[in-house]
Length: 450
Image 1 (cartoon, rainbow, N blue to C red):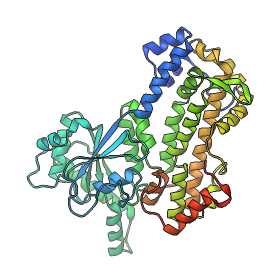
Image 2 (image 1 turned 180 degrees about the horizontal axis):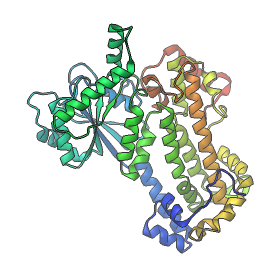
Image 3 (image 1 turned 90 degrees about the horizontal axis):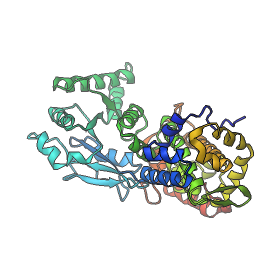
């Protein structure tokens, strides 16, 4: 009986969907040419990891666009690579900011649109609109005629945009202070949203969608809805890159990342078994590329915020003891090495034979059946390792924020900066906590983070 780690009811159409069908790939599968299949998929894998994504962020002066550029990359405003922020317009020309871990994802801080003589047609020429996959239009107050003019110009050129009302936390705090006895957060948010929509409709936009955000509590309010809309609007080959680069501000974000990574397990497993396979030490019946699998497992940790730098900075910023955060991990004393991958392959090989037999029932999978047990073992190892990493990431959020009442693990902006894994020097941390954390990871008993 096939393990629960493997999908059941495989079909030719489903496999082609999972693997990214091309005519040449289908022909290679049907010819039973595993090296050719692996070579094509290796190219696909490389493209997925390196596809370029450009996102433009614009808005009026003081709308928080530069802060958003930093937050979406998991950085604080004082990080050396952060966009400059201030109460006056700081951006005079389109300025690119690379994601600290995924440099193929570029966030552009665009000049403001608050000038009274603003001309949308000249603005889109100035910022080179064709460069961006989509744009975000921000305001911290009411949307204006300038926002609407720019939105119409973007639509005319076939680009997507998303309207964001920022700093809603400021409005909520002010309303709570002025009307403590009758305060209702839901009512305040509804009023803000209705006002934004009405003003955009009055300027001629049809059915505008407005997302309410706080740059300092990015995981709250409408960020999950905005994230879902942005992902849905991207071309399929760019969705994965965008998801991996997103800060881990909520459980839904983690779930979307995991779903995207699971879709590519077939691709990774095929390449690992078909391109440069070598016998696995201690598991002689399995042959694969251990280096590629080590890289893949490391990628899981980085995208889910479980790499060493992310955990160091999380402990330092929250003041939570490192050992408490490490307790949330399945195995805090290991890191991803080829030896660890080989050990996990050995564990996975025990019940992989049933799935390798299932491959034989799908005609197009002849090449995979030729390396049956190896492929089944690698697939199972990747799937179980990913599932374990996702559980670890969810547990880390709960451990780092034990008093957070939100069941979806929504976090403040501090978690955005900490869990995105920006590495040393990224953003501010509490000096005492950071020092203790570093000592625990690099000294104190030889603890190593996986």
